Length: 288
Image 1 (cartoon, rainbow, N blue to C red):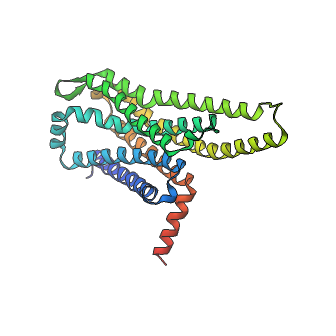
Image 2 (image 1 turned 30 degrees about the vertical axis):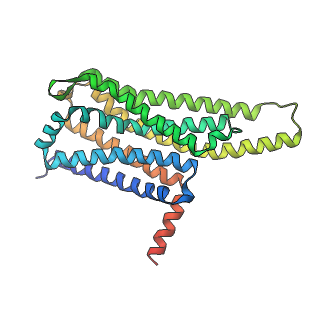
Image 3 (image 1 turned 180 degrees about the horizontal axis):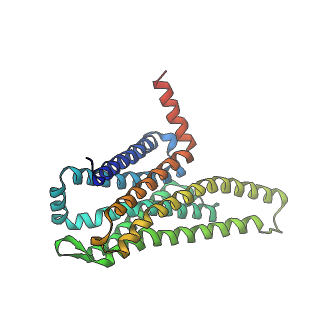
């Protein structure tokens, strides 16, 4: 008879494989086709790559754990630094890729007349900063490694802070600033401007607002899904000793995290009408 542990193991592997496969379908056209090489696509590509890397790591981990449990445990003990820091970096990349998109769009809305914030170079600087920042955030976990590759209790609390609380505060702060900026720009009185100048400026601002609000709506949805999916697991790990955690509850919360990642990837497809249209065209062409 199949045990609950085996059922959860297979389910975790299937879900992570599905997430990685969908993320791969999303990523390849954006990288390979020049018509997708614009700012919004690059920002969503960064989110998708972060999700794909996170899911790929945990997919390989759970496959190894199911096939070679003892060897996997020995590998974890012998490669404790890698096992401690690498998954933390990959997990951090997901929420901070959403924070990066939010910060990038804030600067574009705030300084919409400055061309530097519309260039791809600015986007790549934001993404590179995000990857460096998440790596630096992961380094303190190394100080919590004890003998036998056991982590101190404060490491789990630290992970809760940097994976859930910190990105949530940064995302909320950025969006409040953006909302205040958009609100003030639409109500600002410009007595010295001519009617034609005001109309031209207002049309340009409305164009920016429509485009960025559409992206930010999906960023808020995706961020809320991620926080709602991953926070319960890290709250449990932070405040409950690992030896006393119910394994069924732990497995259920792990599945809940995966479902959050899956929903985020699906939302990326719902947002990206251009990519969906391209993939639909390719699919129909190959089946006609």
